[in-house]
Each structure stands twice: as structure tokens, then as C-alpha cells.
Length: 64
Image (cartoon, one colour):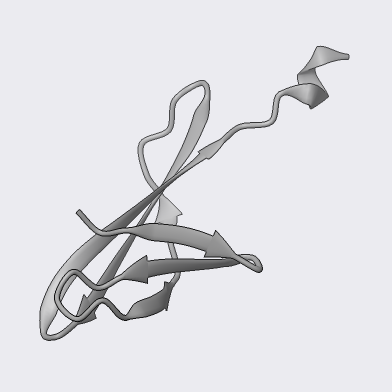
């Protein structure tokens, strides 16, 4: 499984082969009521990998 993190509004994924952190551009994935799921495909060490991010949705707007 690819490790991910978000720092300074950048989405980062760690290569499972060499351990290098790469900036990726995620796209929307399957989303549910509570989480926004994002996915990013990237290639490092000649291996195609997929990074997944899950962000909690902020419902303060709807609690008017």
C-alpha cells in the first residue's frame, strides 16, 4: 500500500520501491457521505502505482 500525506496543500505519495516522496495530482474517486476520496496514478522505479487520499467532509455549512 502506498503511503500518502498532504503538506502545504500538496498531495504526496511515497514510492513503495525506493521510498521517495512524489507530488501527485489526485482526481475524485468513489465518494460517500462523510469522506471525499481521491486517487492518483503515478510511475516511479518503472512501476505503476496508485495513491489514495481520504478527506473528511466539512458539514458546518449545512448546520445553519
